[in-house]
Image: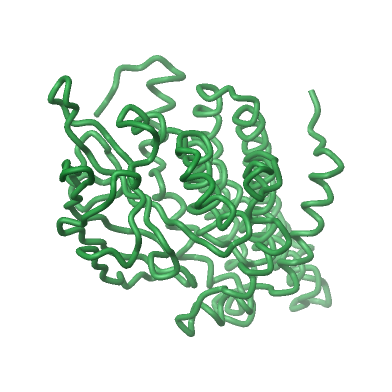
Length: 387
């Protein structure tokens, strides 16, 4: 058993950390509050090869795994730049296409995902069904050689930045008549696809949208995979990378908050010339948060290692646990940092309160802490299904 990264992964971590710190949290907040995107950071990360570390080399990527992409997610977040679209485009979509897309789809989309020139976002969540694909209302039906898609999606990240949306729909199995999931690559400028921006109480340069699909006409090759049978495995292929990279982003955000608070409390003097960090009432909560973040990082590393080894079932359990642990740890770290800084913690200048909304959302999305506990209770503890 080893907890050491390879020399190449150590170099990747150092390089991404340096890139993130050149931009920093001030850049991230400025872009978010101006209603702009982190275009410059994304483009540079793509040019340097960081966005495609998990994409096969034959399609322009680095040939690594989710462990490598988790490093990128964590280090950018630890520099104060948690980029949500890293989870969506390279982690979910690139994995789905690599594993289950047709060769033509891989050649068309993976090089652009690797160098950052293309973004594809992911649409599963719906107003009525949430992310329960058994109850999705978005339906795909045959139309000659092509397809017609109709339905609604909500909380879809980054549609305004993307070329395509990977839409999860349901279509009828000709053999059984039952509805089954299918994934479609839908151009964001397709006729019949409209969007409405959701106002969110989160400081983020990435926007959330409602999507409306009104008989969106697609060619046959918009279906991901060689047949409808690819739908279910393709959908599940994206879930573990999503959990792991979201967790990595949360762990990085927790590290960032603790570092900012520790720098402040180690120098701030109020009572008797002693630093406020010398008081256990200040230092112990920060130390506790640091322990929780480090424990989450260990579970993230385990989940990513299992996933890259092809042990999908074990990675599913570890990935859910990692996401739960990192979500709780990030929220604790940011809240503790704000408290340690006092009034300064609520200012934009000190750069921690700006993360409160994001880490709170991390306990809800992409899967809520309660559903993860349901999963662990059922699949690890052998309890009856409760929902």
